[in-house]
Amino acid sequence: MRDGKLSRDRLLRAATEEFAAHGIAGARVDRIATAAGVNKAQMYSWYGSKDGLFDTVFAHHLDKIVDAVPFDAKDLPGYAVALYDSYLSDVELVRLAVWNRLERVPVGALLAGGLTASKFEDIERAQQAGHVVADLRPEDVYALVIALAGTWSPVSVTVTASADDPDADHQRRKAALRDTVTRALVP
Image (cartoon, rainbow, N blue to C red; front, side):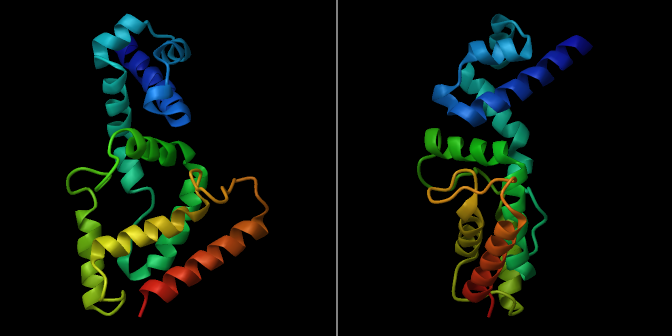
């Protein structure tokens, strides 16, 4: 029983790396099984299919994807900067979310259910208190902050930041991010 749990843990780690690097279509169960030291037949009996394994990996990381950093609707500029930092340290989470978007949920809300509902409610309260511009819907405010924070993320289409970049570059980007979110969303 204990060995089964350890094998599943190794499998989830190997699958996380494989899916983050190659997506669902590009991931290979042979590589996952080999990296985890798990028999492919056992993997299929646990998860049913490669898609079932991806679903499990994504669900396993969902809390970290949604709550990578503490959310404070009264400090959206600080939240955006914290997201910038988290995108540098948790590259796999960003990539998993993007592969889910590309291969599973091409339109509409990326995350099913009310995973972000409390954030929208917090934004609405911050709007009512005068901390956030009131002429935008809370879900649009949130989407804008996420998009701005991802400007230099591992999936950016312009410039991807690396943890190895000079500190001066990170500080310049974070200052620009803080200023832009402030100008756009703080009254």
